[in-house]
Image (cartoon, rainbow, N blue to C red; front, side, top):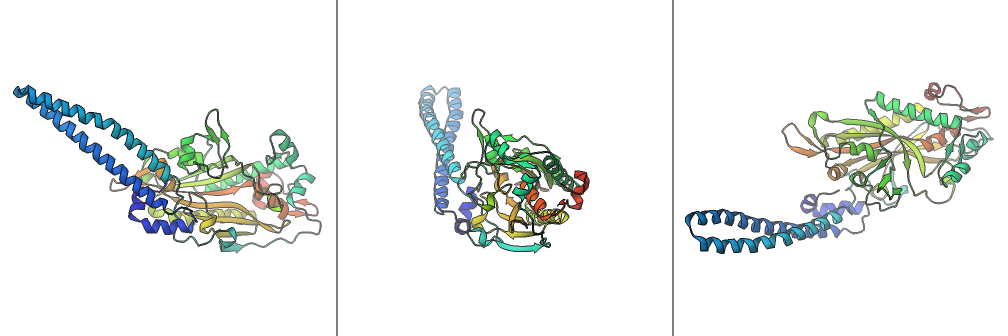
Length: 423
């Protein structure tokens, strides 16, 4: 969440950066400042009145000691009148504070200076493309036909059990999914990340802290009886481990990794790009999250991008890295790099990871702070990335590694799966 003091000190810069994100109401910056002006005026009136009460109360004691009962009684009446003014002021201050917070949560995070202009995915900037695209045999199939042919994933039974977009993994398909999760976790742990297994539902405070609430896109599943939300990513519960925590400078950076199922209501439009595992309501993902010193977050972002790139290289998949334009970025992100792998049988690129720096947007919401070397309290910066999202990795591997004699496996996965071939 943006801080009103920042908006006040950088009014025009904030409007310019909001325009890069195609925020539709830049005048809301002025509105927020006006509401904060009203809040300050009410606070000043409250403090002034309270000061009068405190000073008069001391004076009454002195008058009583001197035996000046009439003056003391008159002053008591004035104090009573002032006290009557305090409660309405306090109520009004609460209303205005709520109004201010409701206004501030409407702002997305401001984009980093490196974020390119643009509104659509086609305007994202290609940073790098690497890896050889495979030449498949003449009878090659897209993954949704391969997984049906080899009984790896059953979409029809998943739909019967729950609904469309909830796949059922079977036999070797389930084992391969488990192998991917274990390899990704081991890869992250070897790089210094500590593994967590978080709750897969969160409360409202947690969802608010990382920017999922208010849920403008309607992507979260809501368990209304308990007011819990099924997580869209492990980022939400893992980042919230440090909600309302004051860290020490020496605690940073904090590196965390977690596997979780992920739940998202929006499953896209019809067409080839959403067939099979390309887009589902429930999927598995391994996430990396860091909390870092503000001076280090740009450097750490680059390190996390390199980390995910090495993971994709180890899988032998052709990939590309995109820096997202302002209009294609997430609400809470200051800068995002997307990773896509090439799906040979579909002849299309599939997004498998987003690596983002949220700067202090999330940590301000969740009050995650640290004391620096001078004892000053600052907000940490938060970053996260998919390392990796499984459905499209699953799809790309079975498509790109298919042969006339079965589906081979990347060498790094063979020991995890216990065989050189999936089927």
